[in-house]
Structures are given as structure tokens and as C-alpha cells.
Image 1 (cartoon, one colour):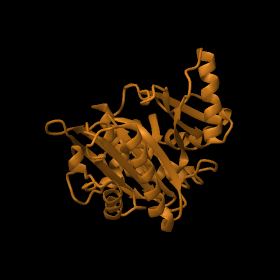
Image 2 (cartoon, rainbow, N blue to C red):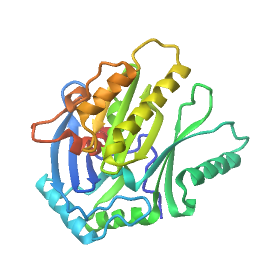
Image 3 (cartoon, rainbow, N blue to C red):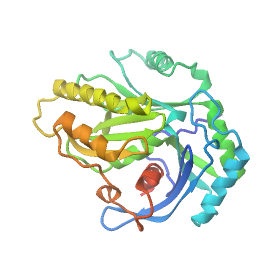
Length: 315
């Protein structure tokens, strides 16, 4: 089976994208807006039955593939995109696992590199690699000059579930990524001075990504109960604060951008925790701050941020 995760090296991307999450699906078509911004040509969101998508890394995700296919066909029809066949797709974060791997020493050969990465992935994912579809992207070296890789994995059997649904309605998914990496495109492409932080939450917990110079330096996916969320977030921010203090002598503001998505975290409360912990004076970014024009206030940026991030790669 070919790897459906596309390496992020600027291949051809469609201007249409689908975002899947437990209980909801959204599709968008993106075009250039005024200046360097983006406009939504078409967009639609549909509620899904709570059992229709069961996000998980180790278990089947789609109990009824024909029902999900019918729902997606209805969604595309409502947005006027029923004839569109090529898509980028974001999956629920819990369906995939994402790691930043750092090599303590430079391997002496390509074979040794593959062996080291395989060993780290086996430990990090906790699953035999022959059961996974894995993609990796080379990242800039860390301040100590060590090689780094962004690695994404999902179970082959789970990917086949989604692929079969898309095939049923004649769709081809060329780029499939976890939701938080779709949302992260908005921070990677906006040229923030200093660091920027994505907090992508769901009912299972949250994923936090810190970017510096448009490259991820910290990535943590934390599974926790709702009542534990603030404490876990606070601990992560302390880790970031200590790490930044050790890595840089800059006296500038720690964060210059904060994007909070999903319904598992109050934007106001997440912003308050960031400002109190890091001494910032930020507000959570909205669509217009990121150059995305929403034609109506009825459309939720949270619902479309991930697929719109992938669709924007086409421009």
C-alpha cells in the first residue's frame, strides 16, 4: 500500500480540503484574497452522528463506512463541490501520532540513519513499524547542531478505512495530515517575530506546538480529562519557558502569536494562562489576524481552520 501521507516538500496541492473530527466534517475551497490574504470560495460544515467517527490510533475509526460516505457526499453537495475529485484531508488528532525526533549524534551512513530512526520510531509510537504508514520531514538543526525530524504515523488499517470511504464517492486524497498540522499552517505561513503557539484541543485532550522561524521546536500531545487540562497546559508552558531561557539570551517577548482551536479549551482561559505564566500580553488569533477572510460570521473558524490551512498550500 502506498504511503498516503505526503512529505511536505511543496508538491501539487488542491485548493479544496476536507476536515474530519468526531461529530463534525467541514470542507472548504480557498482562493487568493486581497493583498496576501485568502478568501473562502466555498465552505460547509455538517454535524455527524457521535458514533460515525471514533478517533483512535489503535482501534477502527469508521464503524459504518457507507453512512460516512453518504454524509460526505451530502456535505460536498451543499457546498457546490460535488464534482470535485481531488482533496487534501485532515484527520482527527487522536487517529495519528506525531513526533519530533532529535538525533544525539550524526549517523555515519544512510543505513545507520535508517536504523536509528527506526529504533526511535518504534519506541515513540509503541507499534511495529510494519503496521504503520509513516512520513517524515527533515527539520532545521537544533541550537546544538543536532539533526531533527518531524515524523507522522497512523495505522495502515485505519488509513484504509478512510481511503475506502473516499473511494466510494470517487475522491482522491493526495495529502492527509492530522488536524493540528493543518491548523499549524496558519502559524508557519504568517512570519511571526518570535515564537508562536498552537493549542489544538478535543474531548480527548490537546496538542500544543511551538514554532520558531516557522519551524516546530516543541510538540506535545496530551491525553487528559477536562478537569486536568489547565494543570497540564500550565506544566507545558513552564517547560517551554525553561527551555527558551536555556536556548536564547533574547530579552524579547516569548510569544508573539497564539492560536487556540477546538472546543476542549476556552480561548479566553487558555490566553489567560499563557499571559500569566509567560508574562505576555496576547489575545488569541482569529481568522482575520491570519489573513483569512470569512464571508459570514455564522462560519466558525475553529471548524474550518485545519482544512483551510491545507487548502491554502495550493496558493
